[in-house]
Image (cartoon, rainbow, N blue to C red; front, side, top):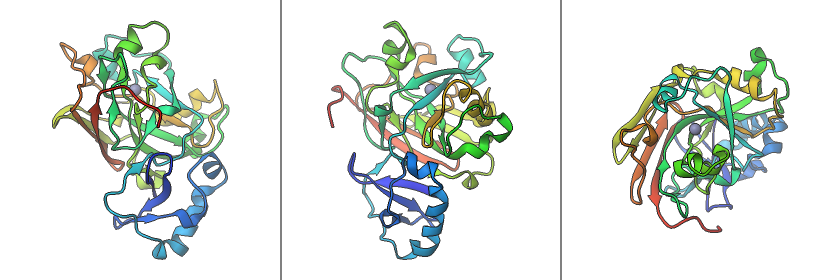
Length: 288
Ligand code: ZN
């Protein structure tokens, strides 16, 4: 299944993309795609609802805004330097263990929402990433069983303000967490929608020029390793997101570095997980 949410910010409703591409309103299913949904067999119930009632569900109108395809989860765990070439590009060693850091969940927005340059920001950068959504509570999970804990996958642009991240002291979270820095989607794909999550092309363009183009074959630590690894340090809750890291070609890696400016357009996509477009806007983020 391909799960979407649509409507105005904070008022999104659940929906689905059917195999023929039609988008239907799943409000009739009765619950949104949140922690309780993922943690209580919601995907199985949704599949049954779809088989029974999907044919008569209202169609989502063209032009309606897409929101993030799941409700705000308890956490976004990001992985740093998880593509061999990207580690080289940033001048850092390929890590011996996964590098993990947090991104505030208030950064989450819809896949095609504007990305906003924060006040005082000057080094806005892009990072196309495969993100994993947890389907079960995961604590001390063995690698062999880890994929059984995954609800699905989605496209994520792990936006970063490099000056905040690298020049202001402390942890990376500072440069990763501004509002609009985590556009998710267009949709959440359940694992059966993907032939092989470790063989997906991912790409990103700025103003039509290709900046990132790689494959999840290049991951240093694969999805089951990451799920198992993180679960040794914290409980992953249903709906939690693991963003698996970015391939080479970020602005920081350009010589000289190339950062985003107001008016730039960023397009990105992953095989089987759709594509998204964000326009860069200046002015700092405001309360929604
Ligand atoms: Zn990242």
